[in-house]
Image (cartoon, rainbow, N blue to C red):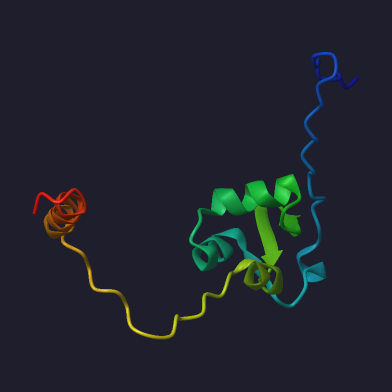
Length: 112
């Protein structure tokens, strides 16, 4: 018998983790990759990939003790960052920036 978690009155219960059903390896899609490879693609640990599958954030399949996800789903999670146009701003030396701010303040009050 499964016990229900105790929650405070008016509090929302946390959603239960979804356990993927073990599948036959032959039933996996052609682009299925292991959690380790998916983790390297997203620069997270394989455990994070498994947790995302269990939380329902990423569809996946369990084969024996290994977790697999679709490479297309992993690539969909990647955010493409476009390069900015124009030049990069020059790095500012903090000492020079503080000196310039001090001189500007002194000029504002007529002291420089």
